[in-house]
Length: 504
Ligand SMILES: NC(=O)C1=CN([C@@H]2O[C@H](COP(=O)(O)OP(=O)(O)OC[C@H]3O[C@@H](n4cnc5c(N)ncnc54)[C@H](OP(=O)(O)O)[C@@H]3O)[C@@H](O)[C@H]2O)[C@@H](O)CC1
Ligand SMILES: Nc1ncnc2c1ncn2[C@@H]1O[C@H](COP(=O)(O)OP(=O)(O)O)[C@@H](O)[C@H]1O
Ligand SMILES: [K+]
Image (cartoon, rainbow, N blue to C red; front, side, top):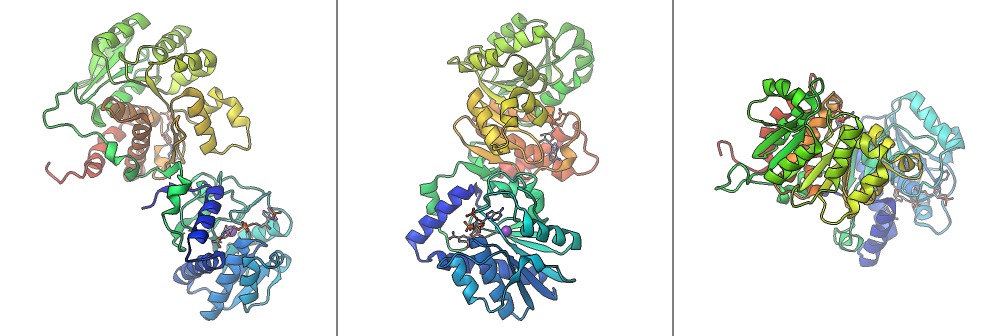
């Protein structure tokens, strides 16, 4: 599957490059775009008694006129509703002139029973919030419950951010062209697109060499090559050692979830670092995970110096006391030779929000551990309030800005988790299910990520792989999922990733 995601601006560039390279001109691409939509309508809604085509003034409307002509030629009763004539001489004007159905004003549109609506009002060129006749038409459509096929995007959904500008229909199906846009994968856009079909309209993949997209759908092809596999002669420490910091006696479960997940993700050894007061309760619940007493920042540093683990999980259940913040700050600035990677999760993110400037300064020191930050939206709001307050930023933009600010990899969690690296690369995760919204699920994600980091996977790839594995485990299990289930669901998924035949 092609997993590059193009912003609307990059898509415009793809159009231009493809037209320059030939063989299709703009009109040729529009005809192919319209044909792809018409084919999808006939295949999925062939039984509809009629088709209502809503056409905007730009090229999205142009696609709509092509769809209208082709459905008419296929014998479907077609009505065309226009928001305004296309600009003279434009491709859309040519498509409108070629359409044998006379358009009526959009203000008169009311969906007929048993008709399918093709929404070709606005696509990539959406420039302001929908209002007036466009918003009213969408409102009538929603009230009638008519099935909607969206051309490129449901009109009103921003292709760049997935945000709704004014109003947008809930499409049953969206047919987009060449590659997905962020708005197809980021909520609320994702939910409004319905099933998304990516149609080939004759733009060659070679244009991507010029565009060099930096955003991808999170699929295994993105990181499979870097996925760790144990060498035949590996010993347990060579497979990676993860440390996990435990909280006090009444909040130890989160760290154990992380520890178990790190082990299942393939780390050869996992050690839980526990305050003395929590040793008994941790010991009572651990078997393969090692346990070490560490009450102070000094004792943790001593263990790091002795064992030099590949990764540490810091945050789940850790506590919000000031001395915990001091300890985390010292970890952020520790020598990367003693500790390769730190996953800052949960309470560590709250400490980061309280002492942001000190943490950011520590992160900038050369030779410190690589970091992965795993905020959910609430934690993100605490750490980066100025990014959340900026309405012009998409979730993708926010994750990228946070990665740049911290010089780390950010997993901005949610139903549309975004992973962003400090080099500008980003991925949007699309395989998770709401069953994952259960206490402790994030602790498992942090542990999987640390397990992969400790095995030498680079942070961006490890973060993407962790989000994907976590999403896959949750989706495959389905209803009834609790966080304890997640680590045990990983082995068959890991086997598939590694392409190992049964019994090996
Ligand atoms: N390029 C190609 O080769 C190909 C492109 N293709 C198709 O083209 C689509 C992009 O076309 P596009 O760039 O013309 O933008 P489009 O979405 O039609 O809107 C622009 C018009 O709408 C107006 N307008 C915007 N928002 C508005 C609002 N809220 N309320 C009212 N008006 C609003 C805007 O006005 P303006 O901003 O100029 O004031 C302008 O007049 C793309 O999605 C795909 O379907 C395919 O055919 C494949 C080949
Ligand atoms: N509706 C949803 N659909 C898919 N995944 C979700 C949804 N809600 C939450 N998740 C995922 O579940 C995990 C929850 O993490 P988090 O909020 O930190 O939980 P906890 O702190 O209880 O461990 C994240 O990986 C998040 O992406
Ligand atoms: K549209």
